[in-house]
Amino acid sequence: MTTTSPANNPAGSNARIKTIMLILAAVVPLLVAVLHYFPESFRIPGAQVKFLPALNAVLNSLTAVCLLLGFYFIRQKQVLKHRAMMGTAFLLGSLFLVSYVVYHSQVASTKFGGEGLIRSVYYFVLLTHILLAAVTVGLVLFTLYFALTEQFAKHRRIARWTFPIWLYVSVTGVVVYFMISPYYT
Image (tube, rainbow, N blue to C red):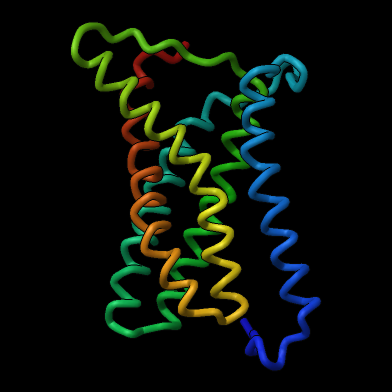
């Protein structure tokens, strides 16, 4: 990937990237909310999507691995390997979002059947996962924007928040999958 320094990069290019990131940061959570509250509007009769929750768990697991490797590589000052891992994490996260939206546009939400303490644990994990997932979209996009525009001081500042939140969302996505999977119909 070739980038130019902000001094050599026309202001319009940075502004376009920032505009795209802002639009995505607003549109993605909005799309997920629309699909959650109006899923029947997007249903395709006979669509075979039952495999997608397992695929989503795999995508989340791989994203978490890439995030951890990216963190390791940047600590070792191996910038190219860091970029590769973070780019892969971004790609996997994007594939996850597409898969998630497709699945939830076709299938009604599964109700958790556990009782007692495990029910409280499940809903705590699910609630924190959902709230932080919505925040993660914007954080990831702005972290990526600062990296692409070589604003590394800003990139580092926001990445300190983005990394642990994104990692939490990726890991809890897998936890939620394993907790709800016995109740899939």
